[in-house]
Length: 158
Image 1 (cartoon, rainbow, N blue to C red):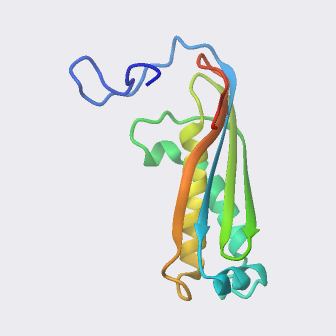
Image 2 (image 1 turned 30 degrees about the vertical axis):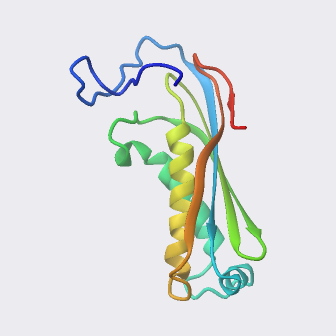
């Protein structure tokens, strides 16, 4: 472990971290994950035959919106003015969509939670849009792969 848990006060109660004394720096985080499915479902998405429309386009927008609303979903996250959010969705034959989200801000706290929320909500949106043909899809391996900025500096997942 790299340090004490910061979201608890001296009495062990949940607490929002006071970041007012931290320096403002450019902070960026990338998270990745995937949603696996039947190969027929991936083909449906790739060929644009899903009845609800452009699955990847809607998932990209959902991921961006989710990053912007992370503080509304995760109780102790600070609301942040995000500078950019990018979502990449790659079809990986025979049975998956790989999702990567990169989030950036200039502020006093990092954007790791925003990146992971973006990936997860993009995957959930894909599930929602094609669940009628494949209820066995799995959202997997959502993780932080890179972060930079702030006191702790650069982190890159092995």
